[in-house]
Length: 72
Image (cartoon, rainbow, N blue to C red; front, side, top):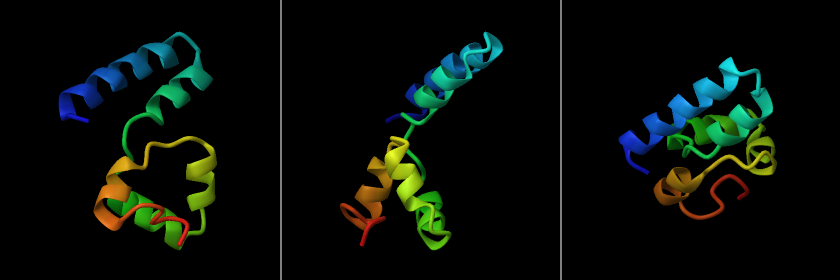
């Protein structure tokens, strides 16, 4: 996902927050790929399962560290 695409999604997220649609905003924000170093920190803090179950986009972490990097 390009930086331009990420910025466009964040603009939509901000509009949803302003409209009081927090759940929709969170769901849309989770579509932005989580940076690999944040995924690595999440694994160390034992919250990787939360990220997976919440539907966070982990494609960049998978690309950097290999598929299923948070579960092994």
